[in-house]
Amino acid sequence: MATEGRIDAVSRRGELRIHLGAAPGVGKTYAMLGEARRRAERGTDVVVGLVETHGRSKTADLLEGLEVIPRRSVGGHPGLDELDLDAVLARKPEVVLIDELAHTNAPG
Image 1 (cartoon, rainbow, N blue to C red):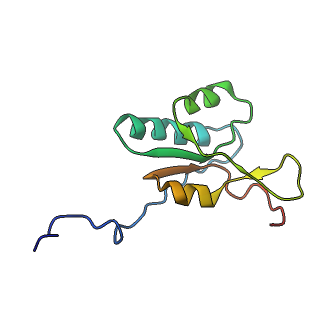
Image 2: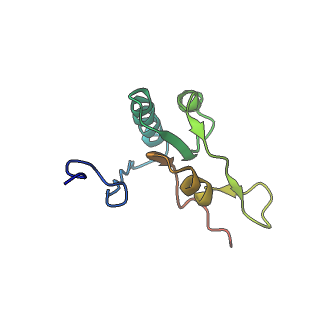
Image 3: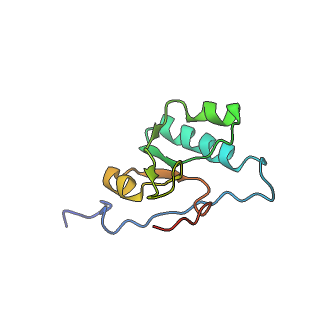
């Protein structure tokens, strides 16, 4: 059969990796960005969907060179922005980083 040994993109399963920590500042985002950089250096298509650096310069430095998907504004809430899921899905990266997924609960 011609497709034998080939991975069909439609049937390929995704993987979810979660970085947990007991307190803010223990290195979850830093570890995630470090792994993303290693994957990108190996040729994996990696994008940043949403990352919060919380003003930490070493964490912000790890964003350098990674493609960042612009956030979407949440209607009616000045300065409040979130992951643009539609943009991420349209981009179709191999790996997308999503930090603090449930950090707000604004209507819409």
